[in-house]
Length: 283
Image 1 (cartoon, helix red, strand yellow):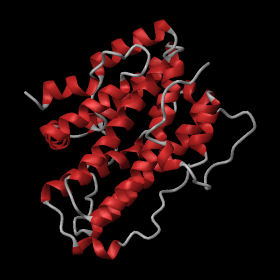
Image 2 (spheres, rainbow, N blue to C red):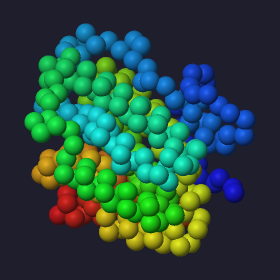
Image 3 (tube, rainbow, N blue to C red):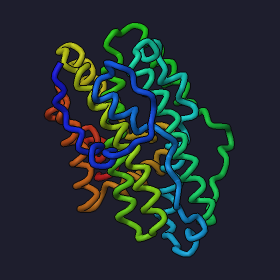
Image 4 (spheres, rainbow, N blue to C red):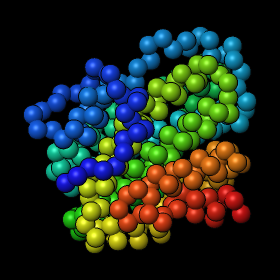
């Protein structure tokens, strides 16, 4: 099947990398592109001692702590994302193992930055698993067992989340002139770009089936929320979303997310992020 989705987010960043996972004969080029760059987040040269020399606004620190929590929350995801259908798929299952590891490293790096800035991450008072985690896990298990095209939704949802995350980090960089933060986020974005590229490739293939894309679109139109908002207080999630995606630059970034996802089959008129912002932030 032809792979027509552009990988423009990932290619300029990943090209030239020589470290990564093992490739096998016959691996699809899109999978090779991802796995060849899979590795722990490269923190060489990050000047942790210089972080305090460049004070950050309180709002930026608050947003950064929110995003660190979202990244580190992946430690509770395995029983949710590793549905039997994902495990049984050689390409998707391998991708998710790498994805989980890399996202966890993002959370650790952001926690280190915050600690060096004098704002260490406080432990969750009730542990890391929330009520919504249990709900997500139960629904995922049931839906994956009953629906053979479940991975089409999983990959489409992942594409939206990764694209939103990339733009959120870029917006955070725009709000600060902190050189160490810029360099750290640039490296994290490089990982998120590879994740996004993989999700888009897989989603395009799996949404080629008309019945799958109709069902996926119907579910996502009704249930989509930005990454992390289900696991954060509503007021905080709306405030962070407003800081990142309101104002001229923020709204332009949100529109870019929706335009990118509109390239998927069945999503040409979708405004998933925009509609959520209309209801929860722009009102």
